[in-house]
Amino acid sequence: MSNLFTISPDFSPDRISGWYIFNTWFQKQTGEAIHLKMYDNFHSQIAAIKNDEIDLIYANPFDAAMLVREKGFLPLVKPFGKTDEAIIAVNAKNTVEDVAHLSPGIRVAVTEDPDVRLMGMIMLEPGDLDANNMNIDIYDTYVLVAKHLLRGDADVGIFLAEAYDDLSNMIKSQLKILVRSQISVIHHSLMIGPKLAGKRDEFQSLLVEMSNDAKGKGVLEGLGFDAWIGIEDEEMEFMIDLMDTLNT
Amino acid sequence: MLHDMKPEDIAGDYQEITLNLFGNMTRKILYTQVETPYPDGKLIVSTTDPSGVITHVNQAFIEMSGYTKDELINSPHSILRHPDMPPAAFKDLWDTVQKGSKWQGFVKNLRKDGGYYWVKATVIPNVRNSKVTGYTSVRRKPSRTKVEECIKLYPTLF
Image 1 (cartoon, rainbow over the protein chains, first blue to last red):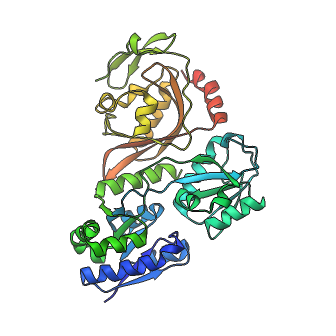
Image 2: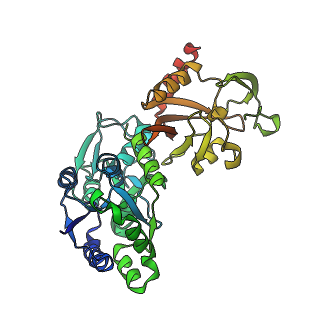
Image 3: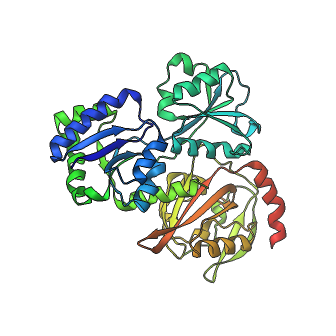
């Protein structure tokens, strides 16, 4: 029977083909039948997880607690040198230079990306801002978040730092960063579900060794990083505890 | 083991007080009125064992506390205890986390150089295989309004 693999819906659209190529490589290496299914949004992906449909997932850190503690998933690997960081940005013409000078009632543009939104909301707290005194507008992509800042119909944008850095120079020149997080320990993770738990060591060593093989290295390039790093259970538990402290 | 603070480590004019700490410990505290602002975008993270002895610190913790990693690891978390913090706040912290719940509050922390920094702290028990193996504390930049409220409130709690 085929296993179902899915990717956190916040992946960069440029990487779709990279993930399909990775899935083909992974099936060939493991001999397992794995079907890659992309979900349009976090709600539909979470529904599939809750319904025990998923066997392998490249998960958003926000979902790690539910996956590990409620659904018995085990961590395999994380991308080398790639952590999730958030940016708070405003229109460059905005005279505000510090989050503490933002006022209640502002319009905040975000995506559905849950860990970035959480980090962004924490960085707005020093300005006495929270979900109760802001208007939050959710957009499909970070490009749309930027667009609404430029148009002036959003006061503040919360970005995944990597997505902000990938915006065109023309767009970035019209925006201003107020805060960039430097948390360093929040990351996406590739995880396996209980059905595949017996394969954990085999899968983990295949993935960690992937960058030592010419073909594997090429596949990794398509995902946008150089190597996978193994994750120990305690490291994952630590990240889950940390996310839990932030989610308050 | 917690050592008394040393005058040679202190930056500027200081006051002196002896604090009674958890575990029947006392510590001579030398403290100044110099505030270090909380850095934007950073989290200060530490983990302790169940008795409050530090087992892990991140770089932001080292930078803000002014201690080296070696000085922090194996020290009681009360190495950060500022005399302006009411003991009732820490009693509430311990009562809450020992019940398995999450604690959150605004804390004035003491630096090695006698200065201080305000944080919004969240402490949670680390539960592994149904057992509490320690506590993780994550500190973030506090709202200045909340800090001002605490500056007024805390002296009334002694």
